[in-house]
Length: 199
Length: 199
Image (cartoon, rainbow over all chains, first blue to last red):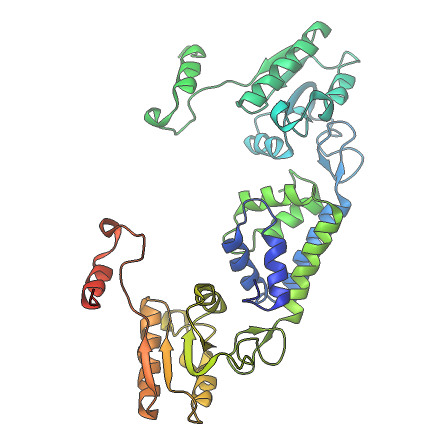
């Protein structure tokens, strides 16, 4: 592909290695980048290397962090007796945006998936069990995604944690708010019926 | 947005300034980047600054180039008597992929657009006229996009070039190959009829 000059072709190549960016998008991005102000390209390049070199994980919850402990884990105002277990940092971010959860998190950094060769040992499950050793934790809310892998992981965790006498709960399945029943799949509709609440 | 650690939030911010990349995509890309091998992040960052700092334009056709002249302009095997005028380098790249055009190009680096404040003086039209001064060029094929701005630019160029005695042509409008007539707009259908050819 030497339709463009070589530094530009090289940039297109690097960009198209990113997830969700195909040849066409990479080309459009590259042609935009070579017209950006130089300070902005330098800021972008620096942000990329910086984020990769400086990335740290909280020694408590396993999430992305600036220091040894993340902001939530060291916040005394949070309820440290309730841990919400999520797959990824972005799931934690999604729940933080709701401003409805006052407890703390545990980020597994993945989900059990035999097809992708990811076993429980590849996830931060041992770290979660360590947090349950002293008796401060009263409830573990499993908020893995409602996929086959997420459900498998939830079942696995539940069997591991219940014997310790800690309450294990799972977030509800149901019809999404603002959704249209007509376009919701049957499994979700059935779960929404099962999980119906009093008005 | 400090749901993620600060170098990651910073990267999300920089990425979401790129065209077609919203908050969600920027977040997904950033979380991918911090898990890439360090060499790959460095290569990506270097490709960005490199492309921006080393970008050059061909002194003849105005397209992206590695040196003073681009590969096509210095290729004696190309037909230098036929110039195809395009808006952007990506349009030239699209025509190069067809392998059907043996002439040379001229890249306007934009299109006349009074609404965006782009006048003929902002485009590489003077450079095109300079190329027509000696009598080597026999035909100028105007391949600007079939949009209002592209058509305006084509009309403008035609009025400028015709008095020089150089043939000015326009690429054909018609039904796209593999397209479905049902989904083609009326203007295109009308143009396809007008431009019908003998079987």
